[in-house]
Amino acid sequence: MKAAWYDRNGAAADVLQVGEQPVQEPGDNDVVVRVVCSGVNPSDAKSRAGSRPVKEGIIIPHSDAAGVIERVGRSVDPQRVGQRVWLWNAQYNRPYGAAAEYISLPSEQAVLLPDHISFEAGACLGIPALTAYRGIELAELGPDTSVLVIGGSSAVGFYAAQMARAQGATVITTVGSQEKADFMVEHGFEHNILYKTESVADRVRALTDGKGVNAIIDMDFSTSVRLVDEGVLASHGHFVCYGSNDRGGIPLTFAAWLPRSISLHFYLVYELTPPQRKRAVEGLQALLEANALTHHIGPRFPLQDIVQAHEAVERGAFGKVIVDSGK
Image 1 (cartoon, one colour):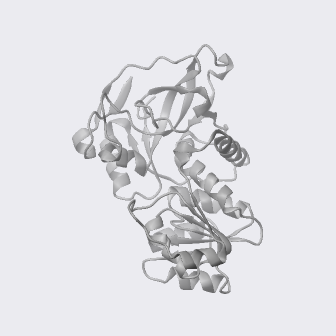
Image 2 (tube, one colour):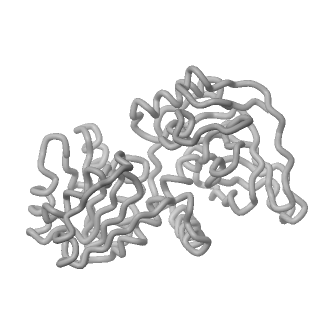
Image 3 (cartoon, rainbow, N blue to C red):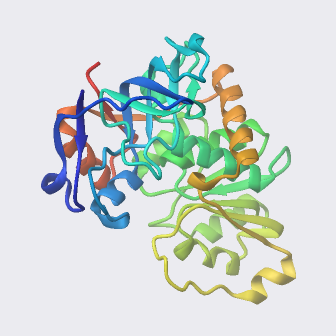
């Protein structure tokens, strides 16, 4: 099969290769998926650059993808052959990911893709949509609640904003440009704060009559933590965080958190417990079946141009970068 891989960490142009690799044989509980396309996440680029050092052998990148099951292991229902599927954690804790024409992985990680959802949309789901679902679950939203989504036009943020709206919450987002604000308005989100040029705290207090939001869905704890000091989060609010640009010591003002009984939730989508994963996958499937989500598909590249795909992600491409496997 044609595949992309690297055997050392470094810049995309220096370490990514495209060529022939053997198709991995399925284990008893595995399926072999013919990959139509894979999605490139920032974590894929960071892993290749060095956040997850290559210890030995090769790494075929990409955790998110969509395709068709072509073979199954001995313990898998043979009726799964021919199913359209989307994949999660395809390259987490395993060397052979989805930047290839075929991938073999555990059957449970290949989830039925509804017929009305495109393969390109399916390749957007894994990490972003499951991250968003778990974040919304932790935020405990509902009618008459409000949420601030940090980075509302990002892959995770856009899904989180839609899921919060589906639960009846008022959604406020931060965005980094007028283009991104316009994108959010186009999709029905009116309250978007241009955080580079206006005060997030002032706008949130104005939009909530001074009460603050009931939850914050955050992608960068190192900068967003100060929002609690500034009165952005209401009493008994939930600060839900899945990332931070600074991974060292980050101070918070205890006196701003305890008297308001604020809850802090950290989580990593790769490491959801089995019950959490089951709820997230089933909940996401229900949204897909109802055609209740819009998928922000960005630039597309053929597999042989995977270097350009990774570089586009590193430049901050708008929308999920897709790599077509050519099968």
